[in-house]
Image (cartoon, rainbow, N blue to C red; front, side, top):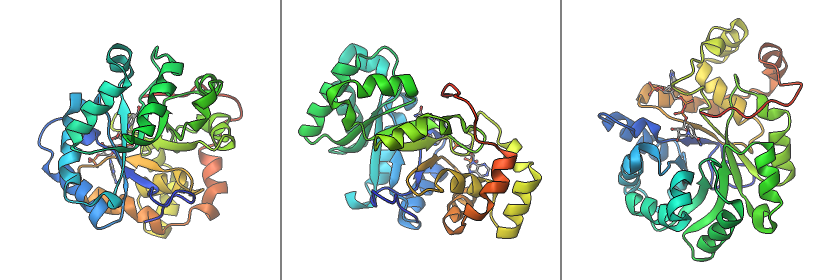
Length: 279
Ligand SMILES: NC(=O)c1ccc[n+]([C@@H]2O[C@H](COP(=O)([O-])OP(=O)(O)OC[C@H]3O[C@@H](n4cnc5c(N)ncnc54)[C@H](OP(=O)(O)O)[C@@H]3O)[C@@H](O)[C@H]2O)c1
């Protein structure tokens, strides 16, 4: 497994938790277990709002089999709850669901109408108390990041988790360069397009098909290679299929760099600012 060039505790592929939302999750749980145990994935993403704590409880159950050094746990606070009950209550409820003592990284899931000054103050306090190692945000566009960084301790923001994949390259124009300039780690969710948006445009593309054929990889593995190509940008995906897990994680052995010119021609980088898309 490849790890973040600056933060070796963070694997470049991360497993999400929306696959635990409902139904029988036995295979999905095995996938998360295998991802950590066999493939060395460390990054695990979950959130307070995913099925009202159900996903956190399942993630927590799987993580019980591992020692803390084997995973990097990321949680997200629901801003609608934060506005009513405060960040601390959200955090403690999530840790209770997970049966964990702290988050490696804790994000505000989206901005809603959360007062950023209070959010930063509370996040800094929880960090001092050891409940979180780092804090950050998710779904923050350029103007949201500018507002955040205008707050003195806002510069301590560690990460912005955004919708980014080969079909959604908008953030490349300004947001991703802005994050890198301010030493804030970008992280992609729905790196494969999500279960709501078909990734057929990638799968059906002749150039992509040829590259995949020549390198014996799937379009999904190529999509993960795309997001992680600079080794400073983790890519989250979810799966309930052991076969998909295996083939997705083979992205690790593929060097996309020599194909980037061709890929850019098929799926161009934006030439103007595009509002951040969200799921
Ligand atoms: N911050 C936010 O607002 C936000 C928003 C959305 C998601 N997230 C996080 O990001 C994680 C990943 O995003 P996501 O679940 O939306 O999208 P995703 O990982 O892009 O897509 C998941 C879908 O891809 C399918 N899939 C995976 N590998 C495949 C393969 N090799 N071939 C064919 N289909 C494949 C999965 O089905 P199978 O089960 O059949 O493999 C599932 O339907 C989430 O679980 C969540 O933790 C965060």
